[in-house]
Image (tube, rainbow, N blue to C red; front, side, top):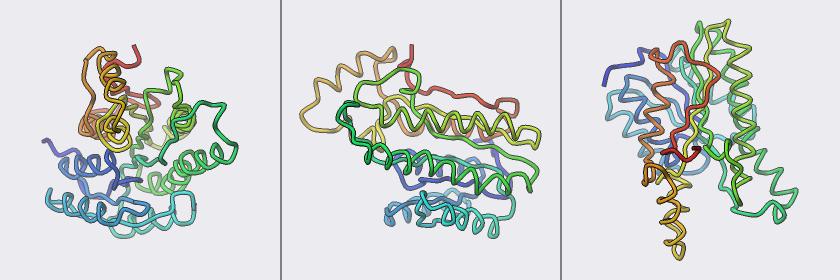
Length: 255
């Protein structure tokens, strides 16, 4: 792979997850040092650190409560202090989502989901923007969902927060472009990794899963690497004139 990054560091919030971990590894293979946060999956974080180092890059892993702005700031500041310039920022985190009809969601569940996802994404952006500006610019990518463009049945707890996150990143693109900062999103469809894998592999719903697969124009589910490669592209100079966009990596789900 052509090296897309030189020096500095890429930040990945949610780097121990099924998709976030593969994003970390893809950035490392493209020549980037990676600082990533995780909530509680310490063993998974160790594995991601090992993969980054095996790719020849340096890693920093920190357990972070993403809903705590000061904890997020401490993570970002620690990465900048160790590696110098922050050139890339990825939000790949998100809570477990209850598959419920809207009528069955409680106000407390709704509030928690927005706290755990939308506020977490904002905290990362808030903490990282000063470092991106100080370094002369950079790129942000938020991992969203293809469901944002297609009202989902029993998946509003995923789509609604990600819609807010997409708008946040579009706002960053509009306001911060003059400082050399780009912001985009990648919208996965049905991906056989992370929360998607948990859904697809759930016992007793094989017929439903097969129906989902047949519904897709490409007739197959995606892989974490499909999302990771799209993220690396949008972070790299190959996408230097792309900002404020959402790239659907969904096998045609939105069609």
